[in-house]
Image (cartoon, rainbow, N blue to C red):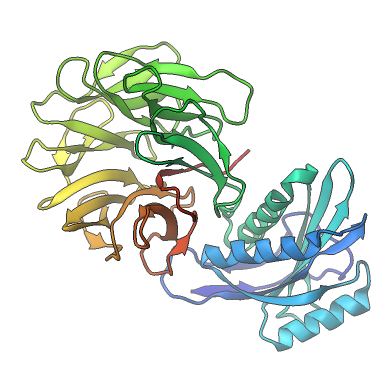
Length: 434
């Protein structure tokens, strides 16, 4: 359901505070329905500096793509920028966009300086006769992060209409490379800005973000064995060795508070789930069973852990309390792996093998199992966006495995995140960046 109610008068050229007081502009992001808000995004206006790279046009396009991906907006684009601080021109533009069906309009302003880019987003209500100004916010980024400026603007627009920031200013970590040579890479949520995290020429697997978006835990064979490490991709800080026991050290999963890392170790013979307190190095064994227990995933409260066990025959999803007690089976039948607990806490997504692999979801209480994908090819290894509304996953629907994203209910068009001949697998979606 889409609700619009505007109750603030403001002149067209005078920005209010970043969160406009007295305005009730709300898109219901938890209810059903497919209504979207039509939003106009003309080219951004360059107020300072030359723009030979057409940055104003590019950033408007990126912002529009971010809002379209959110599933909440239908973007009305246009060529040409609105002049800065020209009330008559602004009013005429919004009049034209409103006539075309737009509910809201974005006026982006850019100052292109040698050392930085200053951006400003002004958001207008086009359903009111005065085209009231809903909100305005300024941003500053280095000159080589112009795409991030667009992502920040899109996230602010989502915040204004939903009360929750968007997810455009996030990263996806993933594994890329042929068999026997797997490195971990980072990219923006839309696949742009790819850069390496590891460069050791070995096999690096299973990246997972810490809750502060500063570090990644992963398994690497760089020392000849599957050991667990922690990298800090945004800092000049050496990586840490987290676990290097004899046998398997794999499937890392940070607790929501970042203080504990759950993992799979076979140091005592059988693959079991352990919890490592990062500050002290204290290790606790959580499972004790003759079956294989692996792939832990924390609930957002930190009070429960979902995991995979074959203790009932074939692999299924189980849930236990964070101290390893109260183990209960969540799924039945089939072959189930890769559980991932939603940031909202209500759903666990997993991979089911029935000939091919597809994504399924089930309520955290075991209710309402449902299929999210039905081919083509194999669809597996999902990771949640921090808003709990989107998933990224790997699929070989076009041949080699690549990353794709969709709404978590499986209702939206699947969008390619990575492209090319090099395989991309094992995605992990970062929290919102600081």
